[in-house]
Length: 292
Image 1 (cartoon, rainbow, N blue to C red):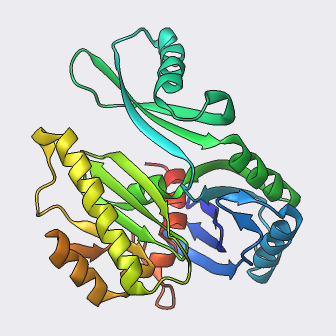
Image 2: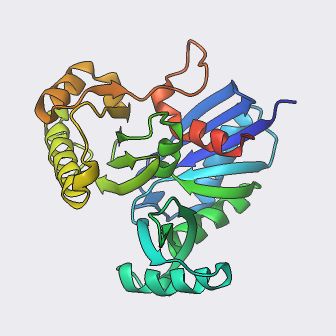
């Protein structure tokens, strides 16, 4: 039996709702937010955001309260860390100690989660995710005010990584106020960066210059740290969000960086009226909940 999943993505500028039933998209809608409601990924006016969420759900006649939530990666931290092989009962404490050493923010200010990933012989590798407590707490409180019951939460760059079929690729998602860069290497997201634009009023030319510079910096950083697995020029750069609708800018990016630049394909069959690039985070949420 197909499973209906209600997904909600929240960032500084908008709400995006999608309802899926198995691999079928049933409903989708978005709602813009005023600039003073959420700032730098922290809900400032919870009651007003909760009202907007209720408005969006009511307009789509969605009455289910249990949802899964995606949020911006801004101010959140991710790290792959390497440890010696340890007994399972010692691993959690070892991860906490290493997190305290490598993260630039005191652990008591963060919610930290982790999972093991493939590692070289004699090593344990862990992928670490850290979300500022203020960011998570204000969003969860707002969702509860809206009458919703979130079952789990994940970050936009990690959800986009779930959409990509290629084990090795680069992802660039561009929104109004920020953009994400994710390098996927052998199925594991390595450098993950969420970068705010200097201003919403930037022209596309100015935005593209910033994106090119940060992409070049990120790829160079990855290659210098992984010379045995450096990204070949054939590795694709997948784009989503606003940039996916600008083929000439994508070609310019490809010419500059020497990689093919392609729209990030949708993992779902999309209705004709749906712009898939706007809802890939929701699709990543739905994929995370679907049984393998």
